[in-house]
Image (cartoon, rainbow, N blue to C red; front, side):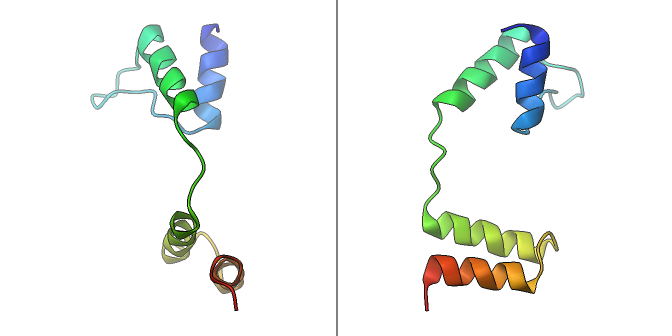
Length: 77
């Protein structure tokens, strides 16, 4: 994987590419972050999906209708 592919992957999955001081991470550290991200389990539980929907609603990222649809989908009738 070359550097440009790594940057594209990092931008796609919103992985942090700068350290706390604002300096960019090195190539080796970025590849390690990508390997860790690929090996991580990405299946969220229904409880976590519902929590994420409520959190988005509180941050005004989604409206009432989207929250109602998510609650109906994950909780049921």
